[in-house]
Length: 110
Image 1 (cartoon, rainbow, N blue to C red):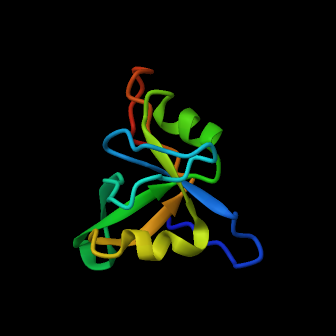
Image 2 (cartoon, rainbow, N blue to C red; image 1 turned 90 degrees about the horizontal axis):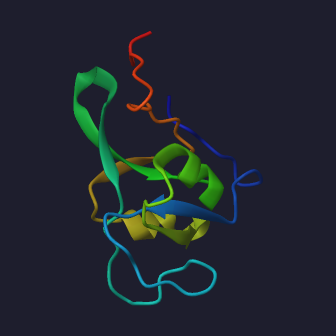
Image 3 (cartoon, rainbow, N blue to C red; image 1 turned 90 degrees about the vertical axis):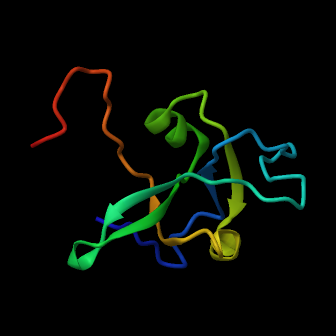
């Protein structure tokens, strides 16, 4: 189920997991003018076709809880997320996803 935020409820910034470490300022925003390889995941879209979505979290603790403390990340102002993902292939942003925990020995089927 895709997450949606209204403008008044949207956080000021989102935390996006990245594939590699990115040099950051004290507030977590990227320092370089370069690109950050954000994590994109395939999901089945309407009609069953695969589409890529970006993962984003409303806080660093939410990212750590879902993915782990070793996951690199950057903070992007919410108003710049669309521009940041331009050209990435992402068609949507999944906010605060609850990812399956493969270490608990449980089954992901319900």
